[in-house]
Amino acid sequence: MKSAVSLSLTPNMSEYFRVGYLLVDASLTILVANDLISVFCREEGGNLNGRLLTDLLPELIGVEPALQEISQGTRSSFVLRQVQRHVSADVLSYFDIIVEPVTHDNASLLVMMTDVTIPTEQAQRLQQQRNELGMLTARLTAAREQLAYVIRRFVPTAVAQEIIEQQQLPLPGKTQGCEATIVFADMRNFTELAETLTAEQTLDMLNRYLTVVIEALQQHDGSIVQIVGDMVMASFNVPLAQPDHAGRAVAAAQCVVASLQQFAAQTQGTNLPLVGFGLGICSGTVTAGYLGAAHRYRYAVVGDATNVAFHLCSRAASGQILVADSTACLLGDTTALQPLGQVALKRRREQIFYYEVCTA
Image (cartoon, rainbow, N blue to C red; front, side, top):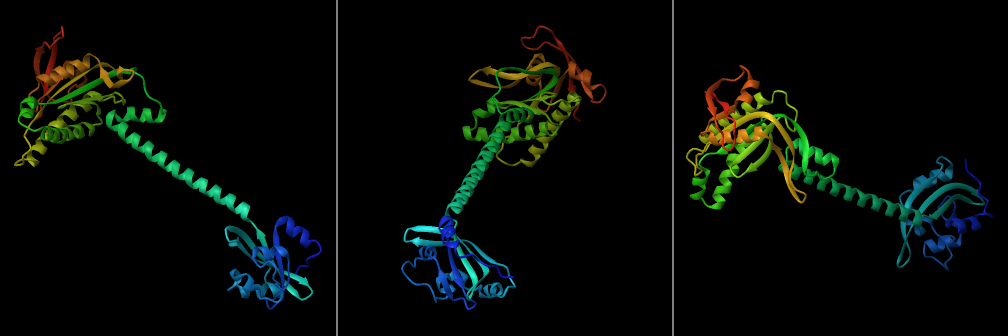
């Protein structure tokens, strides 16, 4: 059903809302046009009556069938959103073109051009801000992930995760005290070997062997506490709780020996020197935390068990795993051990019983 338009109100309303309008007959010939439509179409001073609608608004070319349906009352309206037009040589504006049926003299269509430049530009600025915010968020996320990646390379994974989640720097001091098992793996004859290699060759050799050792320890969820030259220190039950920490530590040490043997077979005949590692293991009460000064510190696990494991490692031959009595007691009968008696470790007053893990 066609609607009626009160043209007596239209001029005031069109100026207030910046709406240009046209009255068009069924043949799409313009019958009436207000001043704003002339401004919007840059036709000021010209008579628009008698011209074709599509000549004035080429944006409607191709939709004539829809306009005819509106004129015949079989369609209610047609809307073309945010049409760009230069209202002057250097001013770009946006308009909504709306076509509705009308009954007024010979007119059958009311065509309105509403200036929507301000809300459109506001929406564009808002969208641009959203896009910029999205890009900033993506960059921050990437930076956070990169930082997390770096942190995980310098401290055990559980410690790194805590730092990331708390989003604050830790302070030197104790963070955790518990019973744990400590494993040291140290390359044999490294000093003599490094004397025969260039610095680049030494670094390459170390990285290749340390990769084997570290991956073997991590297969049993060992936390890599530190890497010092050719030596690796790993902890079990700190920072991650592991009730079977002693068994895990011994299994990890056995995995290190087996992995190094396999690696030696794979690299036989290459220029890579053939070396072995000695391993020392001890269980006991330790304290985990950050060691150093306020401006430079690292994650550490300290205690008598750490010292004993280190000195046992120093005594171990290539491919040999030495275990303190404290660890042997936790293992029970689950691991084959060869008693080696008592030993006085360097700078330690009390002797300890120690064992060799049977790797055959």
